[in-house]
Length: 494
Image 1: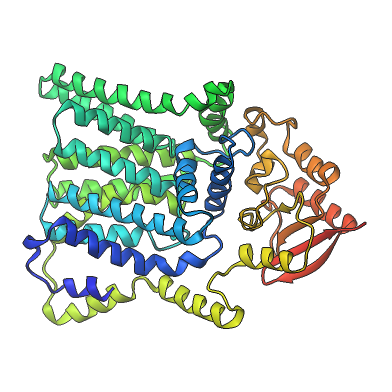
Image 2 (image 1 turned 180 degrees about the vertical axis):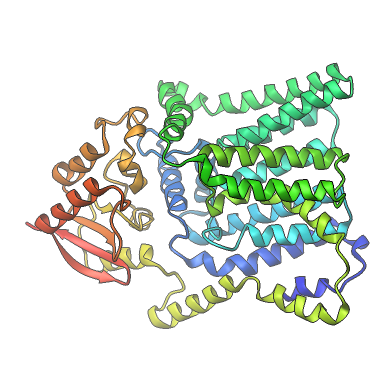
């Protein structure tokens, strides 16, 4: 942070080159994210990605043995890391640093096409902050993966003209969408913008060529993910899991788009104000492109009906440069306040500093830097030779990976998937409802060990039937044998 803060005083930004920027961004990202290398999990989705990736490494294509509601490139990213480095939290989290740094670096490079190096540099620095702080962003999320690919594609659109580069851009956009499907909204917005631009500039053939090449590359990438399933004779699980299941999930109307409107109006209001006050130039084609991408991402939030903190990872690189340009038009801060600004920059990653303290405390208390119930509970289970066959983690399910075990059924890969009846038709799962699945796990599979979380309902508190059933079943058939911080270990009564 001191390196970044000291640059606040620097005036010679013109001499910045991409290598220097990369090094600074890497150091900033590493300092912020390093203490979280040792956490069992930051977000439950990350745990699911790791488990799905491990299954792929073990020879099972996604959706065949285990199942989750994400496209395959997300799992492929984790599978590559595990294949190269083995089962390593540090390697996975370091890969997250690389994702964040590449995204921020190309945010900087996009910025230099529009504005000064100074604004671009600070936009990139805050891109690192925003993708690494506040909530569950210190882990490796599907949003980190898809955003990196999309930012690379946008940079190429803004800097290259040869058709071969448009083909490569289509591949990158394909990788992005097949990491997280909602980026299709941003891609559709780009397509609409390119068509409008071709008509407006009377360059229809020129615009058609580029869109066609980009579209062909995109389709080829998407289709290529189906090839392993075709060769295995299971193409329907690919189609249903990647396309039909998300549509069914979004159609379940668990969240209303009205909840997203305040956030959407704030972002659009800021952009409109910036253009209206001429803080940012509405005639800039680069800014127009960033704006339509922003609108596409906002539409995807509305379709989802919610704006989770990690969703914003997708938005930051495309909104941060226009915001930086607008802020740069404000009156220059009086030099006597520079010290305050530097202190604020240093204090900004307070979450990271607190986690450093937690990691050191854990080392002193338990003899290891690695911490969290997802690590402590499996360690206790191993040390006390507790039965792990068919173990059922209702929480801390990264424990499957730590114990070299797998979830008891396909539908229980992510614990919350058990309660999503609308997804069962697409899993190729013998049971057709969540309650049927839960009964099968408890009454037929009969896990010897179940792990839950202290002070929290096993399922969403709104799901009273699921919670009442499992609570009664645990009370009648299991005994609580150990509490480890927030982790509860139950063993089946003989």
